Length: 435
Image (cartoon, helix red, strand yellow):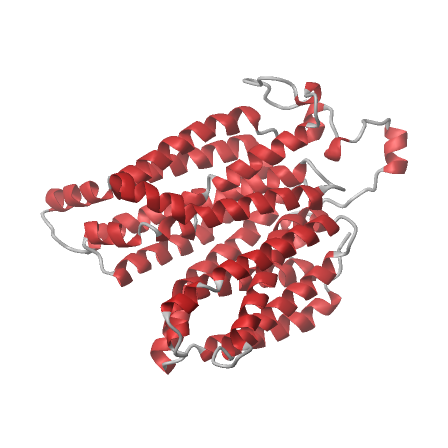
């Protein structure tokens, strides 16, 4: 039975359908609610907000980078909270913090002016430090805690059908995330950037009610089993149900799979973020117009959705090691295409590799950790992995920019990527499932 049964609208065990499917829907909504804390949710606000605050593009970007890096340093603690307090309270706390932060963002211009008046100082440092703090809260609560808790709660309710469930969730999230810039931009055009953030804050507060009442922790707390399996006697369970070792974070971190899969996911986060931030400049350096640069994302997304849909479905019956090598193959294709943009095969290779790598990212980031390390310490383990991903996404834009400003070319990024992927390819040969 659950430790705290207060405010339970109905018992999951009495649901007419397996409650895990309700968790799948509400958990997917929870991940979608992290949009205000994701890069796609912030980037639309860049121009109007930096202008209102009197910040340059570099100052605004640096505030975002610093806030993201600080978030990556503390997100691991949120994973421990997930294991200790459960998905319900952690996700509810995260979405509340995200809603309040988004609301504060809508008043950032007024707050900046008030602080300047109070301190009798008219300096760019005030809005810079203010936005750094707000970006930290956005990234920590949105991209970090809410995403982790919502994704994990879905995985906890399934075992043998984990891949199929993640297939539906991933497709919904992909379409939701890809549409986010459009509807956010519509809100900005309709009522201004301040009101756009306020509308989002009130939407998050509404969703927080759904999370509080509908998120449930482990199915065993309600007399259920993952996948909706029938509860059996202990003797039958010993025979029919495989016994998994429940790894602690410390135990997981000494395994090869933790580092090979984690570093591959981090590379995907790094490459995707850097490419997205500098895509126009990258293509311009090879003589392509802006339209050609932006046009790679739609076919790349189609490839990613097809890959994630197919291989999520198959993941319940296939070893994940083959997925890791296919993801590495996608990364190598993307790096080669990146280095040969001017050639006829450059853009097709980049699109195919980018799509393959992104598709397997959606599969492995959700499925690998509970399969390899069990469910008992899933929060601590995925929290540590999340810190890698957030740090990689924070470092990507300045690293890409530094390479271009120093060498007048982005080629060094491609060569470093090839070297890193080769290292992972060799290291992954013995990256076997520790179970």
